[in-house]
Image (cartoon, rainbow, N blue to C red; front, side):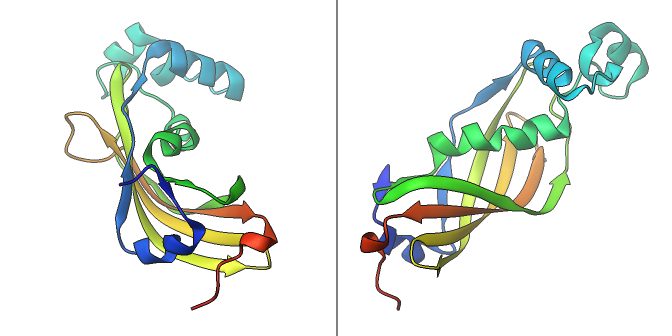
Length: 162
């Protein structure tokens, strides 16, 4: 996939996988920082010894919400930049499923398939992606979701409706 596209070309990509991100390491330091920030310091995330002894995971795992929140970073290396975009806005998620745990020390990456792109108002395009977060060397993904975002652009750059 190209690293930059025009706003008028976005609709032509509906139904296509338009990006696969770089790998991101989810290490214990990241998990601990997220636990502290969210006040979710359950032992399965923050206590490697206890998680190894008492959980079915063999060690600590990332919070599902940590994996979900990493989509913001993951999309930067996966999705092409839209030339006319002045900013992106997170609109929300549907059908989030935490399929497999991300173990401390694992690497993840995102796969993005564009499923919808429609103009909204004079200066916005709403885009929806089916997202899957792959765990390196695992068969099942960490999570799947439908992610909707808004591409904000200058009204003068609005493409013609088809």
